[in-house]
Image (cartoon, rainbow over all chains, first blue to last red; front, side):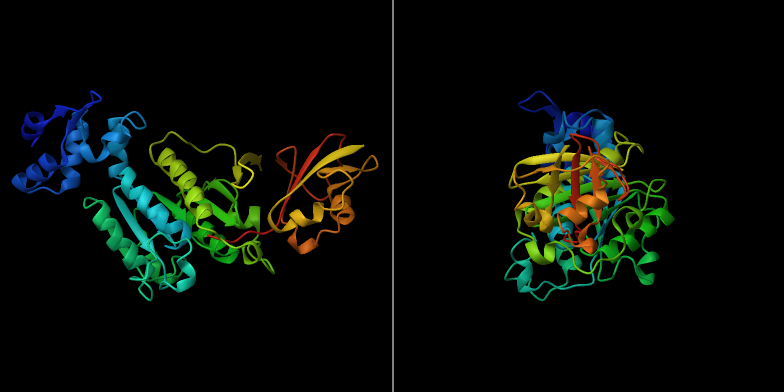
Length: 273
Length: 77
């Protein structure tokens, strides 16, 4: 396999040694190996699979290779979760577990990336999985029409490296945080209302979601201010940036910092606990 | 003394009516809890308070020029 890759690799226009997607697929069939294995072997030769070549400079080959071996639980496949699944698949996180007990409703169409006239009434987790499989055929994706914090979901979470928060209530997030602590993995949290969002990495040895934000409230701000498309898109972008930083070891347990963004005012502030 | 106030999300409207938006003149030794009362914020909606970017309790005593940020509970996703 190494020889086949070395024979096929060429520098791309920007000078990065690259294996074209066509050659990767050809070698995958010839060698009887999964495409993801070809990508890993290519990166081990300090060569970029064409699919990921525009990640070059943002990640090293070793970091890209590490991401291909990581498993992320995407908790909820709605506004945040749809984008999270898409962004992680495009950045090359190798394994995604998608959880959502719900089906698409017309009120999701204003923001949820895989909600469309064709998917109304369909399960969100399954629909997101199908969309991801088309975007990146090498990503291993599992979809579960389950509440991620429920008992039934627990059996599927073995080996997870990180939990991405795509939930939409305080109660569920408090439970998700407890779950991440039990599993000993970080949870990358976001919440939004109107044109404001916050993002925070919750470490298993740091304070829990419930301790910081409370586990319940009479009302929450998005009930009044809504959730327009741009806010989950931007928040999920920041969440996924931090997710890949955690997964590649660039971000380690430290200060508990909450980043708050006001998209309308174009302002961002950091708050420390 | 003068302090700076930032209210977020659904709490923003409570800033209206301050003589100079975002600024408040208060007596020395004013606490975070006093601010909540002065601005007549609904207590249940005061979820997170930061003073100069650091998490603070209701009993926190304010100093001149402090920046107080107050967030309501937020659940959307």
